[in-house]
Image (cartoon, rainbow, N blue to C red; front, side, top):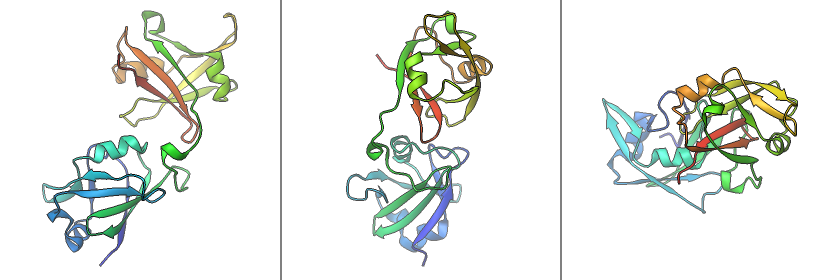
Length: 210
């Protein structure tokens, strides 16, 4: 009887995750009203309640899974290893794109550079990164950056140009910005944030709720 299994995240993993039927049946996970997930890196601090659902003959981790994905910054093609630790508990190890075991977001101990802005018509074809943000994120010498709009996990490379006509040298996001804005449905008049994730080397673009 297997005590663990591994899964690469891809396709629609954000809402449900297909897992091996043999593992589910061997441990009776499909019979449980709830299953609890814990992080291998902090097993005693928090757990996430999920359910195992059978869909078209396959077993998935479903209800509650999307919250686990969001809380732990799980992106496409990360590797997850699940270990059975109790009758109703699985411990999860998350390995990043660099193949290293990840620490949970709450324990990484690094403040992410960030700034907020309102999407206006002036930002229709290009937008800019504040000087202080670009310096803290070590982007001043970059020719391109990668944007991401959670919960969508696609990476969008965007070219960067320096603009020295402003009072201070800023970075303007040019080619690629329009495609990112349109594909992710950014709306004029709404507030968003740019937040740099150094672990993934991406700028997370998030809508801010009033």
